[in-house]
Length: 304
Image (cartoon, rainbow, N blue to C red; front, top):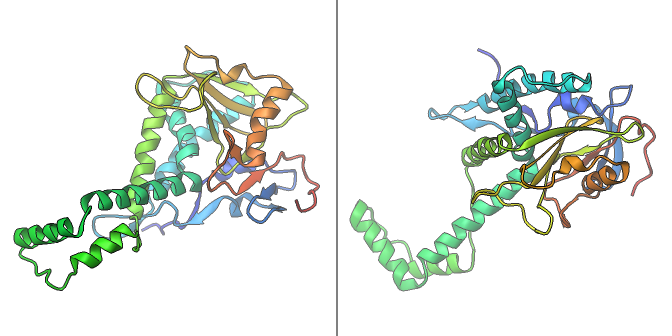
């Protein structure tokens, strides 16, 4: 039986290798420590058991990590062909698989994980407050529970429970399996949306190289709007996903102006400067801690 993997990269190692210098090391800036450093891809953008789930028998499994690895294998070939100047898909299945790979750049990251954990906790607390608007209704709820289950709840103080819920004086532990399920469901949904968009692969000018971060999937609203929306006949107006220092995949609804129109040196630099600053649409991007610099950046700047 194969040993379960525990070191889970939320950015693929082959992807990270595309941003290394000649010595195989990455040049990166850590936005938490405000330090520049160089390190190999194998030790970059990973967390222990990040995609580990527990099966119905209570056994930990890395099947999600293996599924992601399979998608990475196909994407590696696609990006290699793009880097060599080749175009065209082998078949529709390859494009669909690559759409899942692109979507995972949004959903497999610590930033997405943090967002979902915070949202789930907020929703749970809000539902508790709605279900317990008064001590009397809390007591009634426990009474109905006891009658329905036959359990003894006489040692529970409804008044104390009501105050605890009202004051948020309790901890919420979100099951890891639930967050991973949200990640996979969101990946499939996002990939379905991406499949409806027009894709363009933009190659950087000779004097510019794209950078990346630990949240490389970026979305932007259409001109004149301030939010990106999904559903209701509208999808992401524009998106960009860095493939390597030379190529970025962009897409848009074919009825809107596309981010792929951005091909000039200044415009591309402006768009991807968002990742250097750690900001997306004017706000701090949650959980984004690393910025990987172009491979030619072998001389590290001083501490910011």
